[in-house]
Length: 201
Image 1 (cartoon, rainbow, N blue to C red):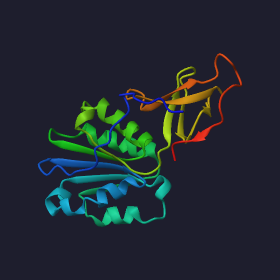
Image 2 (cartoon, rainbow, N blue to C red; image 1 turned 180 degrees about the horizontal axis):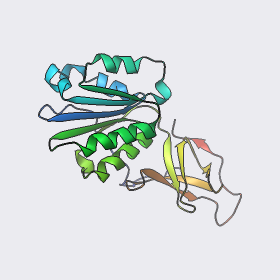
Image 3 (cartoon, rainbow, N blue to C red; image 1 turned 60 degrees about the horizontal axis):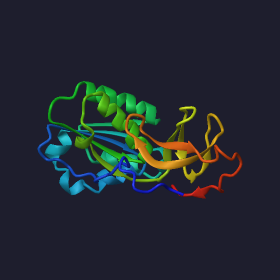
Image 4 (spheres, one colour; image 1 turned 45 degrees about the vertical axis):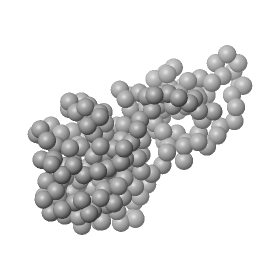
């Protein structure tokens, strides 16, 4: 049911610590914390003294990842109650960032996309932001018909949470919207949509 071969699909290269960075900002969601914890051998005292960790637990609450991150001993550590709060804090961090700051993002695709939007708003090139996907494959999808965005979509097709149309989730990704595109699958023959498939777990 997916449309293959679309080049706009994001590629996540994985977190690697850039030792020459003047400042490291890590924005992490849920299991994205594990991406940073896996980099502990590269996080020496100097790197940690120049690091800021922003974390929102989401689906991993109660698993102790927040405490494991805190124990790393970064210069700054902030636990956010929601993604929106983390993104607000990230805006503040990037507003005062200097040349040589590296941004690292890890979590679900929806989170990475939203955090990437913040980075782009502050003049960072998307290719310079280091990303790693961790956690659910659920997608953030924009209905191309009503322009509503639905988070955590795991099936295709699915009913738009805004207009109710049955949408095929395409692999076409809009960096500007931080969302995949959903198009009406049964526009010409209403009611002919195939059964939903769990594709993004």
